Image 1 (cartoon, rainbow, N blue to C red):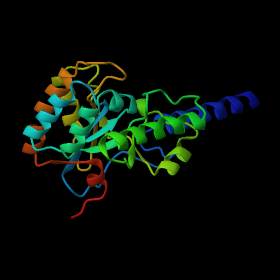
Image 2 (cartoon, rainbow, N blue to C red):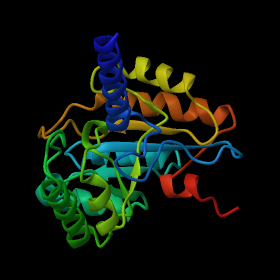
Image 3 (cartoon, rainbow, N blue to C red):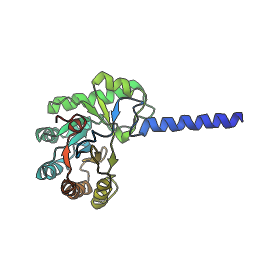
Length: 234
C-alpha cells in the first residue's frame, strides 16, 4: 500500500508538471492566456519563429485579405533580417517576443531564460521601435524562472486555442484543422519561420491562410491582433 501511494503521488506530480509546462491554460510558470473574450466573433492569427525571407509573401497575403495579425519574433532573426522585421511592424501588425534563439527552456536556469527574453526584447525595440508586451515560449514550453523574467520585462504569456501544425501538414490540412477549431476569441498558432532555418519553406502556411481567411470571414468572423482580442475597445 505504501509503495502504491508513493507511485500514485509521483504520477500525480508528473502530470501536474506536464500540465504546468505545456498546458494551454496553465499559468503555473507565469501569467498566460490561450483565448480572448468569447462575446464577439473575432479570431487572432499568430505567427511564430520569424521574421524570415518568406515573411514578406505572407504579409502580402494578409494585406490582400485585410487582416492584421500578431508575429512572435526571435531576436536572432530580427537582427539577421532587420528590414523584414521593420516591414512587419510598418504594416500594422502586432509584434511579440518569441525568445532570442528559439531554445527550449527545459532545465535552463532562470538567468538564462531572462537573457533569452531580454535580448529578443531589446533587438525588436532597436530594429522596429516596438517594445513587445506579449511573449510566446518556444515550443509552448514554460519552465521555472519564466514568471520572474516575464514580470521584469512586463510580458504576458500567450499560448493558443489551436495550432495548425503547419510545419508538418499540407496547407489544405492546416486550414481544415483550424476551421474546425474556429470559435469566438480563438487564438490560432501558425509560423512564418521554421525554428532557426534560413529561407524556410512556408508554402503550406501561405496556402492555409489563403484558404482559411475567406472561409472564416464567410462564416461571420473577423480578425484581430492578440491584444485586441483580449481587450476589445467596443
